[in-house]
Amino acid sequence: RVRLGVGRVRRALARVKIPARLQSLGELPADAGPEEGRRPRSGGVVARPRRSGVLRRPAGVSVIVDAAHNPLAARAVARAMAPLRRRPCVLVFSAARDKDARAMLKALAPVTRAVVVVPVAHPRLRPAADLLAAARGLWRRPPVAAASVESGLRMAAELAGPRGCVLAAGSFVLAGEV
Image 1 (cartoon, rainbow, N blue to C red):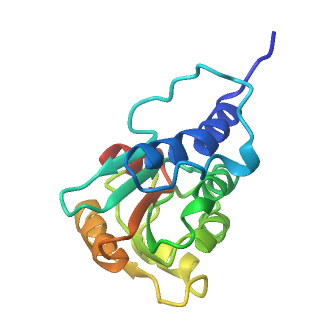
Image 2: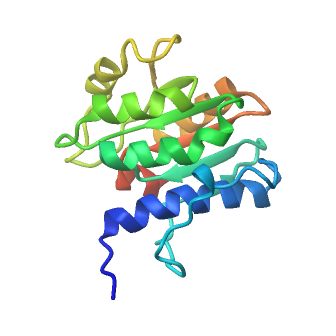
Image 3: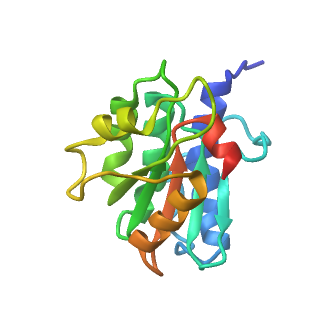
């Protein structure tokens, strides 16, 4: 009997579910599977709704949602996003005050082209100014702040363009609002 912690299950799902969903939407070629063909040992695990997944927005841009609420989870999402490196993907980000936002952003920077930080109405989450400071210098394009999650998603979709994608990550609260 193998016991799996929530973090281990989430990382396994990120490696398998995100590429599989993108393949089903026609966003990835069928042969672009999980990192190095690895499969999680926890077959049959079902993710909670809105915690991770891929949505299709009206503008046609794919929105990938994953809580990625700590540096380890952010690195797992970055590995899962590796097949998309050639596509312009823009990060929509928010994080809790007690999390290492800079480390999370560093993990996600290699697989995204820009970042839009968004304020989320929750007392545990960082203000946009703190997130902007944490994001400085990690992307060629300076980080930008949006007035709301919805406006941040619109800004990110515009920056990504019609063939791009948006990654919404950094907190469970943000994942729930997307």
